[in-house]
Length: 372
Length: 242
Image (cartoon, rainbow over all chains, first blue to last red; front, side, top):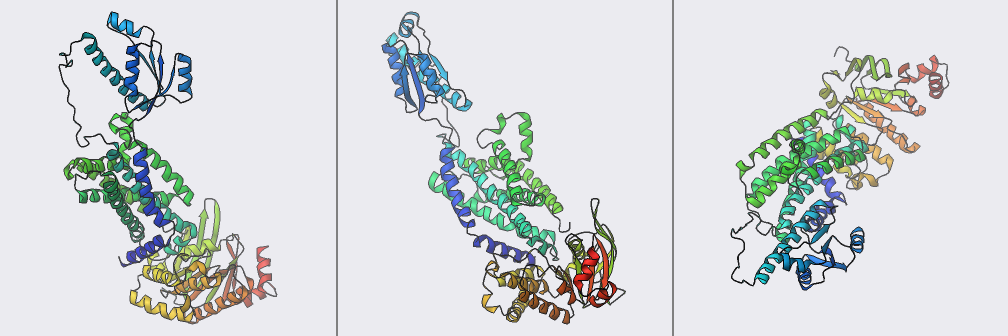
């Protein structure tokens, strides 16, 4: 135990003496949180529309101005030619085309029905379906007003006999930042712990000091504990720092118990540090560590549910997520912070990760060789 | 331990890497307190053997006994009794002289009071009290190697293994370094040293010369010269390596 103290002392001296380490620990979280939380939004603002109005009637004008009046739309071009409109889409100057055919007003007056066409750039499927949904609701709204105008029956105010009242729980304003911030915190905490721990051990291999350690009677668990604890502490500090930034700049809610969140994080970090340690035992250079760690991080992050709900992933992907540590933490941090879930609500994730931690740490202790 | 004279006993040691035989049936003993020179061309298998003796690598077969303990079954006990300085430089460049000593003393399980006292006397002996708070990377190579040697001796081992300790340093520093080796040997610690420099071989009590994984000669420098009918160790070495 006393030996671990000496390793810890040495690691902390080295970490704080390293000129690039402190900016990394303090600077990166601020940048990541402030930039990414704002940037990684799924809300659409300023959708570029291209108008092809072949009718040029007062009703078609009304419809176009309905779009123009909305803060979400921005008319990027107007033309009679659908060909020019297509070109605008190809040049990425427009996200979609609204085509109003000749005879739109006439058909609506005579036959009580008319058609318009939305041509949406579908390359980004998510954006396309959002544009579709927004635009459809603009047109539906327009529809309702038309009927009232045309029939001149102001008494028919409510045309929807069944009123749907939606209320969004836990995030009533559907604030995307509140959803994203915890997710980005997860990535941050993981990078700091997994990368730094793995790099640290491999660096000792590269400079040859590991050999000097291996000729000492130090025990495997003492060495590993001495190597992992510093990064556990730094990662926990990082979480606290990130939560403070979230509170101050984004006013993210902290409904649940913060000690519970930290307790869960400790278990999570044991898994991640175990993975980092395992990577360091199978690599002999820092480049190898970077490559392997980067590969796993990318797969794990994209499958973790940070952007897309894991429930909508195919069954096999959900099965793969059993070994994805991000998946558990991503759920739990949001559950605790935003919903206020208690220990029993997250017990499945907690115990899964606990088993995972035991497996990962024993695997890497077993794989770590003092003797070749 | 049957024989108190021998601190290292190696019998039929074989180490293979796949089909490559790095150590081919080595048998030799090292006497307590002697300076044992372990010579051989690059790739002759010196480092492989020294790694086995210091518990960094398992032998493929054979009996190896170091400081009275079997390197297979009592590896941790072997490690308490040996010091090791590798050819790859092994102090932390971003720690100071004092921090390096404290760290290595600490992981050998020495008490902090003992570490403090011994560090003071060591620094005084090395005349490095003024630079105790300098980072290792700011020091010249010769100084670093003296510190590394002292660190390897800090926990008072019975044997110290030096793997090419004087590689790349100037002749004066090399001479200083050998002074330290003599002092160490005088205090009763066995020194097991590998080197490329044949003049250094002359300083050893006994010398073994390896070639292609085998020991081709083992005796005092004087006897070896007689045996191979050579003027100096250089000639002995060349005759064996050819």
